[in-house]
Image (cartoon, rainbow, N blue to C red):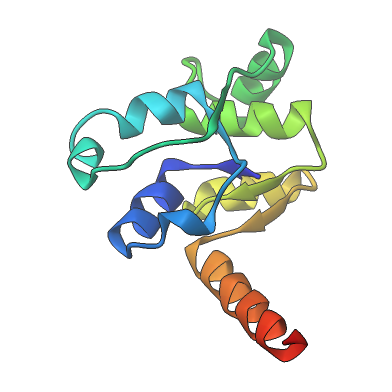
Length: 126
């Protein structure tokens, strides 16, 4: 799962950051959450930092109509690099772009619902 800062900040604010693990975080997203105001949220990150390929960055900038690399362009670039990934973001515009590119998208609510479903499923097995 490729995770955006909106998800990390929201889950941290809810005290549920542990619901996501083994995630990929673009370098630009990581830079965003290590600066204020997100830094004050006290995020302790144990995720894999990734940098998209130059080719996919150029493609994502063209798709987004941007000239400078941003967290959004890096997320789109990583989706281009690994089309099987799920994108976790609460950013509506970014969600729409990722869906248009064939990406699977979830948000904070989806992660919370999935966690509850998994908990119920585990309880039924015991």
